Amino acid sequence: MTSQKNIVILISGGGSNMAAIVRAAQREHWLRRFGGRIAAVISNKADAGGLKFAKEQGIATEVLDHKAFPDRASFDTALAELIDRYEPALVVLAGFMRILTPEFVARYAGRMLNIHPSLLPAFPGLHTHQRALEAGCRFAGATVHIVTADLDHGPILAQAVVPVLPDDTPDTLAARVLTQEHLIYPQAVARCLERQAGLQQEAA
Image (cartoon, rainbow, N blue to C red; front, side, top):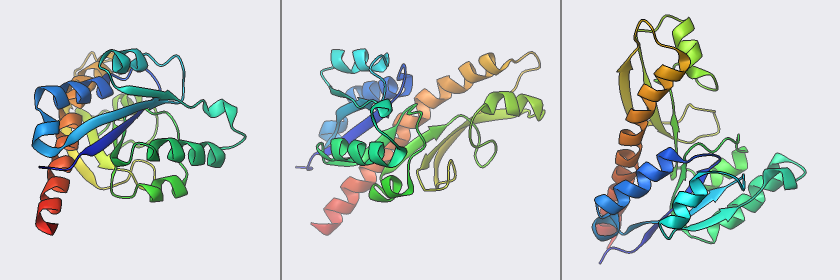
């Protein structure tokens, strides 16, 4: 019997990537295959739309308002304490709009994932689609990577490529990229769970 591997997902908004991961976990029976379970969805915004979806799926939800803390470090400390209640095997950032302190990143080194809407290392940071269009890129895409202290520069786990069309706007390009995000992010999370399950079996 594979021991349970809790996944904690952090969101700030609608949580469409979170929903894609939850649906994949259900559809692909992650609990039976890897012991993988979405243990909690945490948001720094009480009005984040993704919280409703998570609650409807019977997933524990938490809100920790960053505005209630005097600085980034104190918020990150409280967030880590909240996450650790769920004993996470993986921490998954899904539209979590916070820059994390190096101490927080180090705490979850090797087991915190993020998705970025560009083909990293191109266009880290914000306004990726606008920047891709301004640069004349013929292709754009999304990247799943391990989170490190360097923003959007961790080891790459998965990428998807989409064409840039002549009449694209940042919004139309973003929508095309998002459909691919919903495919590659769950796949990357599943591979991480599978690798953890394999390492656990080797150690047994």
